[in-house]
Length: 317
Image (spheres, rainbow, N blue to C red):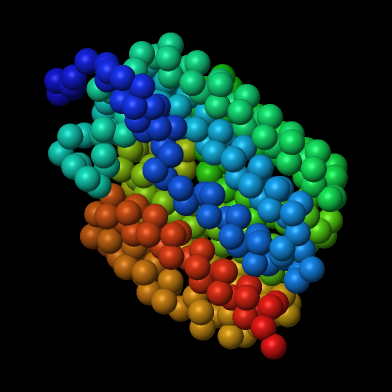
């Protein structure tokens, strides 16, 4: 391992900045789902006070859940050495090592654990309040939120679900940030919302799959069992290629079932051009970290596309 600083930051601002890095607060992609939910709502609900309350409370709670997940993942990563192996200084801005304050010694493992569990409590409290104020108290939504909280916190900690074959399933759960708030606000599920839940989940997964491709050797040494570590390099590339194809497949199915109009496909075509670049970078050229960054960009660009599609489909004419 290369030498790193072990000096803790001084001052409240410096300390908060370090904890923000531990909680990956700069990675805001998941929280953009609130805009997709809002624009998918029936017109009468758009400007209701309870609508804004539920969306805000769910999003604030989700920030805590994600922060807990990544902080406790970093705790495990520093203990088993996988983060030191996977975050090479040579990767530069493509894999920013400064986002790992445990690697730099800016925080201790104990501080990271306390932060992680505090963030989990934060998430549980705000999600509980969201359920309390929601106009529709769906048992399914309550159970789903509890399952997401429990499974995400134990992604790499406690039960270590990501080490036991469940990593990819958890990596799909960001899509539920569309479905669950919509159910809490309307008490129903539409074909459009199911499609957008699938798309957001796949966008998240198609970032992490390339991270796993980069991390495969370190993860194998750490004993993590996921698609990358259990497959050959060629087999994993075929799996990722198949998951790429799921994105157009779910859209075609939605159009065939009249869940969305045909013109919906025209809006997402520019995204597929970026997706093709991502597949070429990661699966053909082997530039997996470039492919990961393209996936992150596509997730951020995809949200305005879904917002525009919702406005056109539901709130115009």
